[in-house]
Image (cartoon, rainbow, N blue to C red; front, side, top):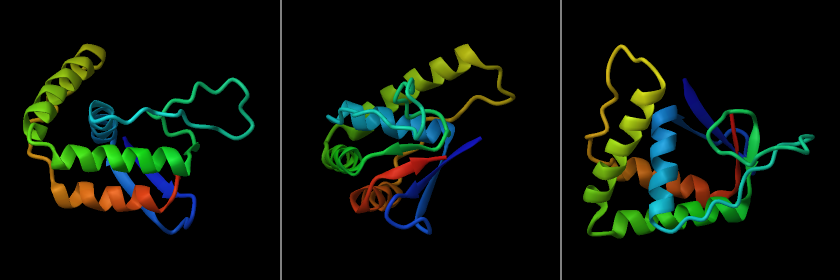
Length: 131
C-alpha cells in the first residue's frame, strides 16, 4: 500500500510514500515541533481529521508549511540520527503488534536528505490531498 500526495496548486505535482514511510515522516515532524491542524474531507461533517488514510482528505497550505518547517528543523538537528532510530523502533513495534508481515520492516536506514528536501519543497508550494 502507498500514500500519494497531490498538490492543491498543481494536480500534476505529486509525492509518494509507502504507508510506513508516511507514518515515519509525520511522527518525525511532530518530534521537531509540527502541530497537526487536522485534515478536511469534502462533504464529511464527522471527519476525524486524520492523516494516516488515503481518503482524499486535504492538508491546508499553512499546515503543509508548518510540516515543512518541522522537517527542516529535523534535518538541521544534531540528534536526528538518534531520534529517527528511536522512532523507527517505536513504529516497528506498533506495526508488528497490529499485522502479520512476511518480513519485518527495516527502519534502520539513514534518512535520505535529498528525498526529505524534495518533500519539504513540495510542502512549501501548497497544501495537498492525501490519496
